[in-house]
Length: 172
Image 1 (tube, one colour):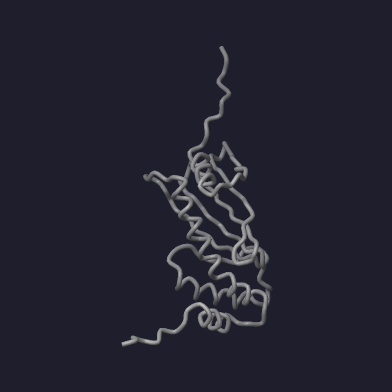
Image 2 (tube, one colour):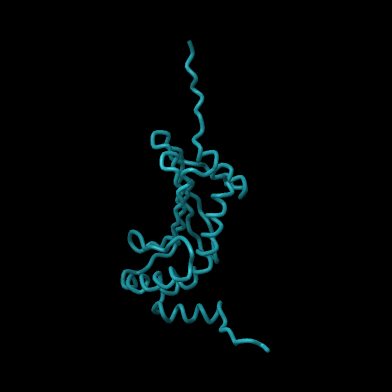
């Protein structure tokens, strides 16, 4: 009798492959059969900056986690200002969050529990695309606080002046 050695794909392996096909990416997935998890780890660019996108998906937990890492690291002397900036940014975004990890690395993260639903590659695409827009939008202000002498309030005021012109009221 011969044993079937054909490996059956994990659910999220197929879903991440579908996601990558939507983006026309050819990255390799890291599959951990024992843990029943799949990871995509790829270089990305946003707002003239480089970074990393990591998507982790677990068949056991039915959770997808999306992480964007900025290439810039926050100087230790700016950790408090970066926390103040993140607090304000969290008031402006509807999902996900910015965190400082390790030795000053800046990361945006978002998790969704898909238990009881039918996630697809398009579901992951929506998570990644929404995160990508947030990461790109706030890249200039995060870099300003992380790398310059600007504090969070100054950087946000400058950012808002450039990206969110004041409402001049009704034109009637």
